[in-house]
Length: 261
Image 1 (cartoon, helix red, strand yellow):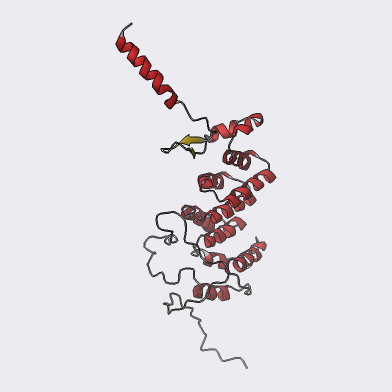
Image 2 (cartoon, rainbow, N blue to C red):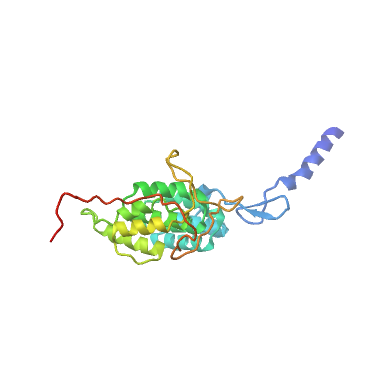
């Protein structure tokens, strides 16, 4: 037998074990240290897995399957578990579900999970929903942005305090969301809430002019990560230093009319 071919065959047999896939568990791959590294498996395989073979799925993959194919109650429970686990590996899946989900209540639960994750990458999508959705989903998007440190869409929410003939329930929902966000009980009056909002901004010292970009800047993040800087929950204190007043309310008075007796 040719010694060269024998050497090639021996080298191939020696390399075969190292080329075999890891059998630690489904959805894992060894890293440089030799330990299994968590990697979400193929989503098509997760969705097409028969119920008999779901035992082979990892915990993350099982939650992804339940949040996609389960009943409404099962999807709500899966989203609740994802929110409480606060797993960074589920962020891309939540963003995908937010775009594909057609149930408005489930969209709200996905946005709450994204706000609990605290990832700044969710801000542009939530801004789009807060801008164009005129239902409760848009109101909840403003609340999710508030939890992520973005208060630029609060004035739009305050404008919804005016009673609408087509959707009379929106004013009450907007008022409850404002009370929950700012932790202060004010009457449902637009001017009162605007004055309070301008005096209690999340970032009162921000002086950058963003109108040339047509979009407010993203919230501040922790250095080297996409996690937003957490802000204290509850009522926002007044600034301890003097800040520039960026808005002025002008009241027009019909001076030619005599005062009421």
